[in-house]
Amino acid sequence: MKFSTVLFVAAASVASVYSAPTLQARGVDPSLVPDFGIVAGTGPDGHGNCQGLNGILIPCSCPPPRQDFINSLNANVAAGEAINTRA
Image (cartoon, rainbow, N blue to C red; front, side, top):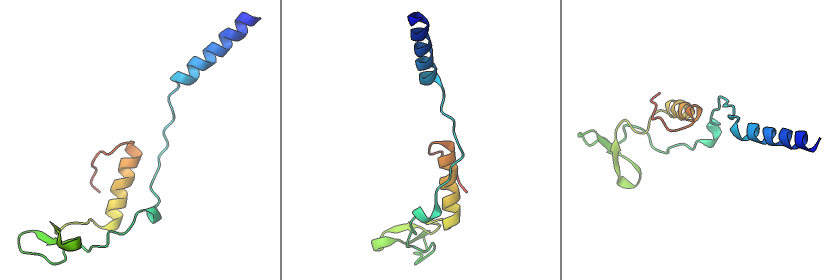
C-alpha cells in the first residue's frame, strides 16, 4: 500500500512539472496605454524630422496612430514576446 501511494505521488509530481502551460489569447486594455502627447508630423524641418518632446527631433511618422500601436502591442503580447510586428 505504501509503495503504490508513493508511486502515485511521484507520478503526479512529475506530470505537474512536465505539463506545458496553456496559452490563451490575451490583449492589452487600451485604457492602460497612455497617450503619447505628440502629434505626428508636427514642426517638420524639411529633412524628415519633426518636433518631439523637449525639442528633440523625431521621425515625422512618429508616433504611430494610437490604434495601430495598440494592435501591434496586442500582437506582441499574443506572441508571448516582442516580435516587432507592424500594424
